[in-house]
Length: 258
Length: 327
Image 1 (cartoon, helix red, strand yellow):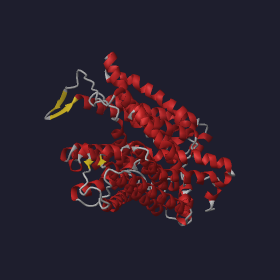
Image 2 (spheres, each protein chain N blue to C red):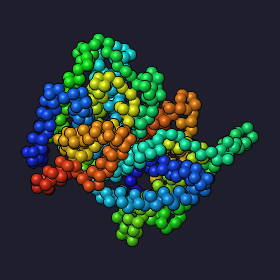
Image 3 (tube, chains in turn cyan, purple):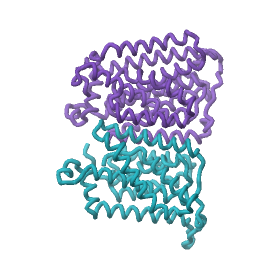
Image 4 (spheres, rainbow over the protein chains, first blue to last red):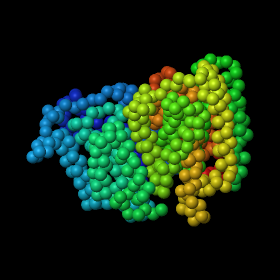
């Protein structure tokens, strides 16, 4: 949709808190509360699009950027004010379980997150390419006016896409609460990594995003191991800048119209 | 065409001149340390906001990580002084040079793409640098660098004992200088070409303007001046740490006055800072740090939603024929 949402990280953080409270108060496993949080975050996304981002779409091009940037700061700092910066953990019964495959040991929680992430990606890909709504979304993102002239309700598609994006961010946040502590500032690093991955893979390129996600993930882990964990994002960022200088369209993107 | 700002109503000039004169007289009235501090911050953020306004307002490149250049300036002066006993005046040269180098790398990587790439990349680099500085022992980590003046009270060390007032005047002079520079750029061919790129990049290219070099040049100017502001800040507080120099809210403090005063308007950031910076200090005292960032975020969202052209531009449009000012 050509909207970059700078509040994505903060919204993901809200979903993580949702998952945390669901566990604390109702003992809902994150995998169960996922079914609840996804629709809620979808609704939040639709509301944001309807009342905050939608009305300024026709403004100057920088409006959405500053608007979502402000929104992200507001959400994050409200969370900091009310919940402090304490790290909160979810201790599910299987949190310490380990999966053994020969000599390789894998944490069950991470395997679950990985499986969930891959299946969500596949579902999302199928949705975008196989269903009529998915095709309408792609049509609107390619040519808004053309799509409108074909009878697609552009405003509805915008709301839906935004809702879907936030919903998926929420789902991602919920899944990782099984092994990742929740805190108000948790979202931003994820958002920045997501951005790096997206640019590396080429904007809107699904398979490219998967492959570059793998590249960045491995790079971050290896550099955390070799240098220090605070430097791992710096290394990913340096790779990212180098790639942009040499190949601005991303590793797998087609040449951009300049 | 290049005479657009002569269409500004006279009150705008008077207001700006009055504000600067007020800041020049204020320290002489001996109003106490707190007021002197706030006055310093008002001038500093007017200055920083003017710097931020250069690439954003004239070239349409919105930096969400300008705090990075500010922090680099503050840190280079601090490190040169405390680790190598080199005068901050040298930091005043090396800090901006470092910031310009970093800015050129980020700019070169992202300026050929959609404009939000630069915004995000700047934000990413600033945040990651903040995290790196927080855990980097050589630069003091989260504790930062405390200044202990080596020769107390010396112009060479950029220290005036416990007297704070000289800093107010240095900032005021820098503010006036960058105001003049902005005015010059706005009325130069260079400025016109920048605004052409901002409004229609493809059209500008077809006229033989190279968008990349123009954007890089204006970003380099802005980054260097922002870093000089950082050096000044370090001398004023005699303490540098990552969170107060490289955080997102420092960038926010640069964006807000420019947005409020009107993007790309020469006098906009000055008037914006005179309104917002005292407000931000008052709320910081009353509400604490996190809530005042919430407040500033809300103000930014309200401005974007309801006054997208800023206060000044709205006023100007009211007083002049709208079609002449429409950007």
